[in-house]
Length: 429
Ligand SMILES: [Zn+2]
Image (cartoon, rainbow, N blue to C red; front, top):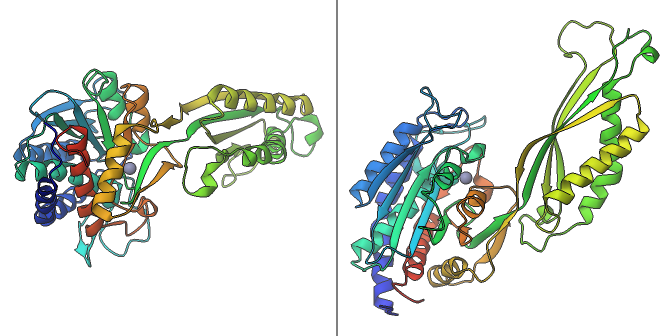
């Protein structure tokens, strides 16, 4: 039953417009539940609030506590919610996923970060754009279709999940590992992260976090020649990273459209370093016998993880050759593989068609400089047809006075509604 009825599209878009106040109120109400991560405050309250709202909108609700995850505790339970609206047929299923955890408010706010203040066409608050507005957009995209009375051939799912900001292991990864998000039941996934209303995000770079510990030999600080300084050993590593590795990384460019342009290359950041005795404690004259540092290497799809890790090992071997008395240990902390949606994926096309229809321009395809739950959808659930598209500006995420523009919210709700209709085969745009 494929119809290309402009009137049908217009009816759905009109229902989104009519629901503006409800979408804004839903977003603001979620902002007022301070789901700060870490440690994961008020997750249960927020999951049940989202579930209750979805139920009012006609979804069948399931809750999933992340049993088996160490961070799922009695004090800070990890509760996820999935709402399903059955269609005329079971498939295809379009799953819209948003994380409801938010990063801490931080300094510099001029209004209450958890007040859900709506002013001058903007919804303010921590998590407004990243990404409670996205959850509201997903819910009301489906609702506008229902209110317009459009029969949908496939199923629509909307989920609210935890812990994206800390890796998503008790959230989307848990749902994927337990088969609730899976290629056997999920055809398309859209994550309404704030990547700007006219951009569709098709993946992200890889992440390799590793720790290097340098071990020296303690001695009296008045006779440092009798010891081996671990700080000196770490200094040698840092120098070789700067002189040998960073220039090479800067030359490597990915064909994946990562934004901003500076993130199109391979990068390395030093997250932290700790060596010798604490500098604000009482000092004793000692040669530092340990020094540890944590590194954040963002690698490109074209590089791959094995080559990335091998390059680090080879570099450290060259450092060892120069510093034979220092012992270096390397420990992997986290690996996230790069992800990219296939160019010809129907989910990209559906978002592009929706943006063209709603905003009158073709959206840019971008990839994220960081990482988000896309990786779990693609790698664990095995669903390749996943993109991020949602309301809010990327630059607003994690900032003081974070906001989402109401017109962005309405427009992206419209785009999501049209994408759902196209992906389920209700219309062809
Ligand atoms: Zn986010």
